[in-house]
Length: 122
Image (cartoon, rainbow, N blue to C red; front, side, top):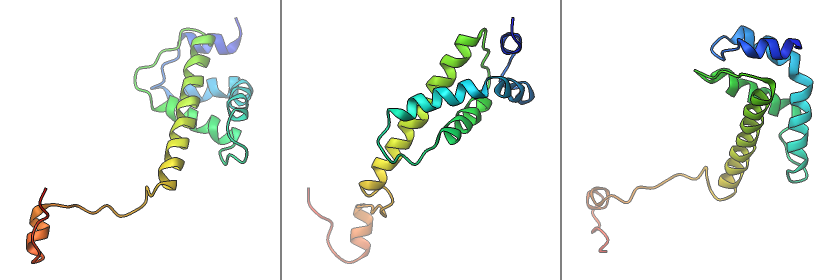
């Protein structure tokens, strides 16, 4: 049994020290996994391999009651987190292209009447 499997057996993500130790053992494999997912992204993608691994680490560390029984389960969860990060990144990029930072205007009847103009009829 290698060190990563031994560490996974008693790993609880609420113990960040153990998670940090585990990440150092499997960091190269996580980078390969992140690189694989980024190859499928559009050319010129601004998220880099290291940033994706680190963001996945932060999400894994933020889990309250995760227990990884073995190596394959840990990598499956890490891979799922990486995919979610890429989806969130794409959604935020798409939202900004479609006016995501624009000021939202409320169309309440009270605002219309307080300005002196009549409320629109619907």
